[in-house]
Amino acid sequence: MKTDWDVDIPMDDGLLLKADVYRPDDGQYPVILSYGPYAKGLSFQSGYPDQWNRMVSDHPDVEAGSTNRFQSWEVVDPERWVPDGYVCVRVDSRGAGRSPGFIDHFSPRETRDFYECIEWAAQQPWSTGKIGLNGISYYGINQWQVAALHPPHLAAMCVWEGAADFYRDMTHHGGILCTFFPNWYDKQVKTVQYGLGSRGPSASINGLAVCGDEDLTDDELAANRADFGGAIASHPLDDRFHRDRSGLNSQIETPLLSAGNWGGHGLHLRGNIEGFLGASSKQRWLEVHGIEHWTHFYTDYGRLLQLEFFNHFLKGEDNGWDRRPSIMLNVRRVDGFQLRTATAWPLPDTRWTTMHLDPGLGLIDRPSAGDWTASFAAMGDGLTFLTEPRDVEVEVTGPAAAQLWISSTTADADIFVVLRLFDPEGNEVTFQGALDAHTPLAHGWLRASHRALDKERSTAWRPYHPHNDLQPLTPGEVYRLDIEIWPTSIVVPPGYRLGLTVRGRDYEFAGAIEATDSISTFKNPFTGVGPFLHDDPADRPPAVFGGTTTIHSSPDRPSTILLPLIPDAKAGSTS
Image (cartoon, rainbow, N blue to C red; front, side, top):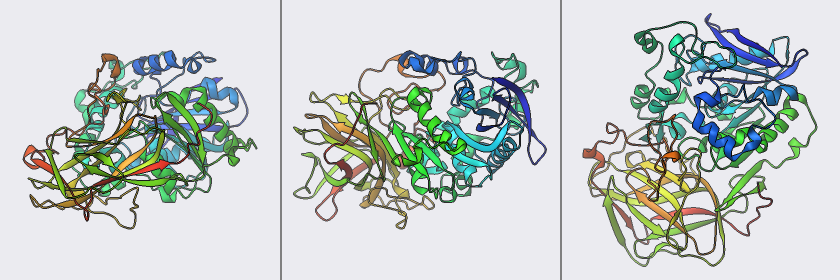
């Protein structure tokens, strides 16, 4: 493997971005390219030790066959890809790592940079001109954006757990501000900003300063980056700011593989499914898996899946990829996963089942006998409704939606709905999520003043809210809320119960939490939702959101949840 460090890539405004290029000694090869802010010279092991140590301890196939000297956070290991006949190009995005400039995440400027990097790579003497994009999270999110610009040499894209809608997937769940991004900015971007120079780390692979050779003052560093968290908070509705940072899925025609995570509620699931469904690509595949969001990208399972996809589209191999079913799901069980393939999403044989909330009977498959109301503190733990245990297993796989009739003692209310699983003894069963070790089955959110529906884009199983106007509540009046619940998958064993919790704040796991359940690259301890909290006091002032919320139900206005039941489980081999 030949390595070219700090190759200049010129942008249309004269800025030079820096890239590392890993390639075979001679010849022309297709390219796997990534563009992002995590610093190409920062090793996975030193920058993200918690994630690395957990991954290789549980999955030794990640380390096998590589020195792992070139491993970096959320991008491919060139030692695994170059021997298979690929050039790997890692670009430090504008203002990050060794690339100078102003940091403005997911902005049109970044998307244009990404486009120019693709076209630059296509013109290099070591390139066949066929460019593939691959990477996790940030390195997947910006693929949805750049692919909509139709770079002429973009031949395939693999979006591994990358959101698509900046407002709905990333910053305002159901219209409620998520505090993830300003915290992420402090812990994972400012720490590798260009200009930290000698104050930043040195690359173990070549000794270069990870954050450039220039030493800027703190004031100079601040002037070279956007106030990302402040900008997000100052745009509470889905306006041009958010649209400029969202993927235009309908304009994407590139062959794509979209890989999501059942435990990725808050960032790493909805966009993979919505992007897959909304793309105009004639050749597109959806895969969904579980466990931590970085792990399967590096395991043999994930890497070989990516390799087969890119071998087909970048090398023209007739390897059967194009004959794969378009949907590949690792159906979740309490003790692992089983592979299921399908031809459409939601699954064609879904039996849509409406369950009714009843404060006395729980979640039942028939309407309540009469009218009822149940109240809870509007910023409190709320109410939980349980199904009866069944004597056979029941599979729930797909999107869900709640329809609740509520009133509030104030002019607004935030509703958090949580789909949960309980064992026969009444203990909650949680799962290793994309980040949090105690992740429930599914989440949904809605700010009541954002209840307006886009009827053309809504379906029964995925209500769609435009989030472009506020409709305050009149205290005491009853309103219908249609709440999107992000997709999930679980085979419920005999004797277990599903539960729906309706509450006024983020879910918290009630069981024992270990210090090792959290991750050092995030500010907050993980208590059930990882870093995806909705706790900004300026966004949720108690005077507006701290009253009492009441759920109402009657025969003509039932409060319900729509669940995707799958008859006669078809899951196949364990994966």
